[in-house]
Length: 346
Image (cartoon, rainbow, N blue to C red):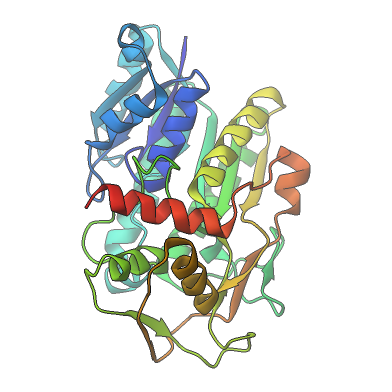
């Protein structure tokens, strides 16, 4: 039997994707350093996937930093000895705070890029050549209309985005060095939010989050007094920034179809946007969240942040055409599910 290795599998998107993998019948091995996540999510994933006790060996976990090549190599070899060869990898493991990345660039280059290189070296040594990489829309440069295609110039403006674009470059060069061997998908996420519809797993960032949706949740739960909105004079319909928010379950399902595509087709490398193609402003997001959850979100306008753009929305036509994937969840469902996750944890 074959195993899918999921790096960073106890994180936000990783945990939801692991659940999808289990529901699809895969055997998975999760490795995570748990720097920004908790092993506790494992039992929740198992419970949601309804794995019978006699089939509990379909999911395994090992605490591991992907920069530890020796341990990674032992993990691959152990799975081979167990007749559970790792044949594909879904690579989430990374540091992901945009603001922190500019404060501590070496930390981000080391963890994100050096960690990925270590992973690729071990994959190569153990005859594993199928990889789905967790990339980001932060790699893109300026687009006049705010709609980003896979062909939009790559020109990130922060260290986090630069680490992601560098990894994509490494993966492209790796593929072209052995084009008859590697199967690689770079999935460029836009703004994943929400939680599993059960409210049983969701986003649980350590410390103060940087993204808007977890901050809205903190305001709604009265952990902070109000939401800071960075700028209200952008060239948008209400002056606030417009982003493409996508339900985490749609993103997770995007990994399922990408893995299926890579497995069934000839070796290749693809770059694909995962977004809804619909833009929602900050004020619209707040209004929708208030309406569907029947509560108020106090906010104040503050100065714009350096590097923020007015509009950032995915052109997801390639995902629809190539992977036959399109998002199903509405912005209202994202807001409902995200708040349900928080309510269950009060």
